[in-house]
Amino acid sequence: MGSKYDLMITNAEVVTASDLFFADIAVRGGKIEALGHDLGEAERVIDAKGLLALPGGVDAHCHLDQPQEIGHMADDFESGSRSAACGGTTTIIPFAAQMRGQSLRAAVEDYHRRAGRKSCLDYAFHMIITDPTPKVLKDELPALIQEGYTSFKIYMTYDDLKLDDRQILDVLTVAHEHGALVMVHAENSDCISWLTDRLVADGKTAPKYHAVSRPQAVEREATHRAITFSELTDVPILIVHVSGAEAIEQIRWAHGRGMRIFAETCPQYLYLTADDLDQHGYEGAKCVCSPPPRDPQNQEAVWRALAHNVFSVFSSDHAPYSFDDAEGKKLGGHELHFHHIPNGIPGLETRLPLLFSGGVVGGRISIHQFVAMTSTQPAKLYGLYPRKGSIVVGADADIALWDPEVKVSIHNTMLHHNVDYTPYEGIAITGWPVMTFSRGQLVAKSFEYLGHSGHGQFMPCGKPVLSL
Ligand code: URP
Ligand code: ZN
Ligand code: ZN
Image (cartoon, rainbow, N blue to C red; front, side, top):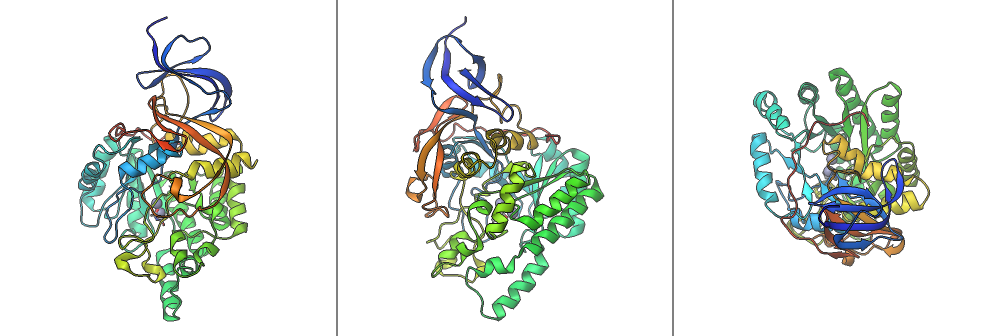
């Protein structure tokens, strides 16, 4: 037997996307070096009896310190990664967003500067493409894919971000040729602006009209259109933040035709409804995100689709704007009409516990589905597997130890983000990750942050693994 291990997690009930077994986990140099029994001595021993050892979460859709034309995100890489770690996540993939007129490479370089040495967790970047000029398509994008930026998001809505259909086809063609994965925000922009104009003309400007201006039909239509583009260009795509039954129908339809359309959903579509936008005063702004939360029937449809593996990825879509903030939901210090409210809600820290409680403890999904959708599959789809996404020999020792029975009532005061509210205030859940290890370092314990900025490393991504 060689020298001591750095860390030994003993008596763990280890759960992966496919297996469950009791083993000690031996860690050296930040990697899982052995799984088994009587593995030898370690500098530090953690007894995990009664706890579940799960691969740390991979949050493959979160926005941190993303440059905005107006407003300012409340979380940067420091507070965002801190919050993620305290919620059992060990890898974050936020977005390097191209501004129109900006080169894509400049956007990526700027985002590296923003990341600095702030993150306590390992991270990769998706790109957001808003200006697919010939230079971007022919030179920058292929080179960046080669360098490890192998996924990018495109928008079918938002005036400053959206691409038209032709541009989308061009971007998908580059993804096809160079082996990248395109994430699609699917909502029909013209329908939304037409509905918005009518609502505003009628004086209907409160936060609740955000949901009225973005009905399921606009998401359904855009989802179908994106699927058609995927068919025409013969490249798999991933539809992000799917909100309800009608978009799910389109995805199931594509699956029925044998197409590789991947899909993601988020906690807000399981725990919030449009009624949460209809609160006294301006409170509803706290739940303004796009697509908007729907109703209990649609929540049920999303749960059923999770159970049936329609979704490959479960992400937070953490888009952090503080409520009482002139850079946030009250941009410029005012209560805004619904179509000017910065879109997005926080959720990095609550993503995993909400799905664990409602899904695993609630008997709707298996613990293996939970691991698959929150860690293994995002790691595969975004080219980080097997370094991330499982508990196997040779992988990074990114591990969350869960107490599956602890009762927690979510309050913003216990969370570690920089946002002044959580949309999940007061929700009672069962199960919480009581210890989070990033490459063998304990970064969070019992709601306390123990990590440090700079521990997190940037990871270039490999090619997407598209057969899950
Ligand atoms: O409302 C949301 N989801 N804001 C974040 C940006 C996006 O579209 O994902
Ligand atoms: Zn989006
Ligand atoms: Zn997003």
